[in-house]
Length: 131
Image (cartoon, rainbow, N blue to C red):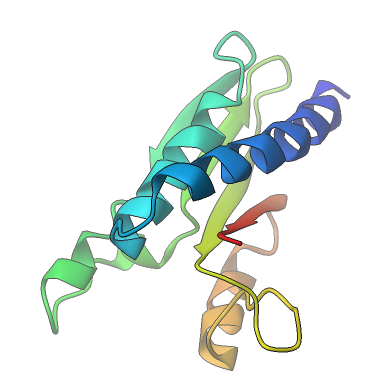
């Protein structure tokens, strides 16, 4: 299926993008780096074959105590146009690895558990880190 070939291309392209991003983001705010990474991941999907259905805004972080239900969703909801199949994409950009050399994907069990409500829909995670 074309979806998996595209995902393979995204992984390869994301590796180069993270290398380039590491060279240009020294001192840039982490939230902005995350948004830059999301924009890059979106750019990897050929518009002829994929449609961006939803992009979570993360605006709730700006308003303490007020959280939109939609901000709990994965970052992106995409549609593969030939089959109309939809899937989620979660983009995780981290400032570095843990002291053990691992990428910390979520900060708590709650963060991981919140994605379980989307288990019925295919889910792709694109991760990047500064070196």
